[in-house]
Image (cartoon, rainbow, N blue to C red; front, top):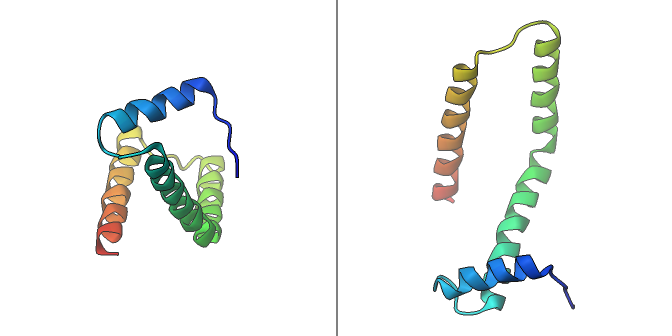
Length: 90
């Protein structure tokens, strides 16, 4: 498979490889594709739940039931901590 990248994207990849975290561009790309695949798989597995939450949020907003900015941020931080904990257990 041949993949063509924009020059600016190639430069970003080369910079990351030169920092020493990856031995080769191929190793870097393999890692990036693996991470993206995991993300896509998670989204596919949770699609129904995500759609449900979006619909709940939209209905709440339509009904005037909005959260304050800090409450939203606090909840997102909690969800992020929980998700990171799940990933570490896997």
